[in-house]
Amino acid sequence: MNKFSGKASLMATLVAAWVGASSAQAAEIKIGVVLPLSGALSGYGQPSQKGLDIIQSITPTLKNGDTVKLIVIDDKSDKVEAANAMQRLVSSDKVDAVIGEVTSSNTLAMTKIADDSKTPLVSSTATNDRVTRNHPYVSRVCFSDSFQGVVGANLASRDLKAKTAAIVFDSSNDYSVGLAKAFRTQFLKNGGTIPIEVQAPGGSKDFKAQLASVKAKNVDMIYMPIYYTEGALIAVQAKQLGLSKPVVGGDGLAADQVFFDVGKDAVNGYMTTDYYSPNAKEQTPAGEVFIKAWEAKYQQPTLSLIHIL
Image (cartoon, rainbow, N blue to C red):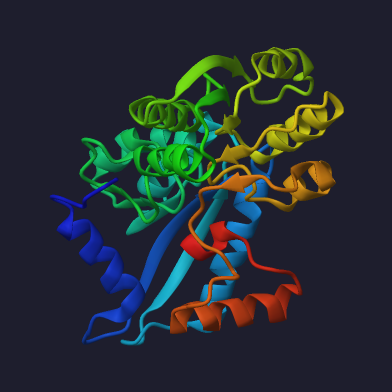
């Protein structure tokens, strides 16, 4: 996880902006926002945009009278577009800081621009360890893959009592690779074995061959650090094949309603490591205000991604 070493100035800038340090004269603070509002990852970006809208409705002005202007750009779920958006915000819009992106690969495409321009970049949910490593102007407000991968492995070993595991991941996705690595290392350290690892490339729709291979190994559980679209399809196809082993995923697996709409009862019992649960017994005062505002405006339950923002 990012320990924020050497990043005091970055965090001070953002805290002063959002909390409202005293100021002699009110000002407009420009914050850039890069989100996947369209494309394959829009299920992450659209709730995040709604979350930002809620925050601005709750706090239209800061404590010192300053206002925050959000300049939002849709990167279309593409890392090249994410980098272009970051460059535009820095060069043309002259923003004070940037929020984005929500995925690791797209955020990684923005980090060099942030460092070169000395513009603070904060991601809500980019968990890959490399996002913040050696990037003095980049931070995250969530846990990292090296943290949640260990939690997932310990859940498998200690709670599920699993001795063997299969890993279903996407080697072209930074998030998936980082999370699979962390799980693999810890699960083996716990004394488990991983007799099979199979690929689940993003954008694919047929995973029956991979799942048949997993079923043949008769493992105790399956670790699946992939996104919600592929995850839902895999759940349905696994059920069709009679593969009914416990499944543990990361924060990206059940983060959108698509996972539940497509997966239906096939995803019952799936477990994930995530940032937040609306069913948690204890909420912060700010969290309670946010949840009430969200449910009143959108008439739907909250999702974890919006809370991180």
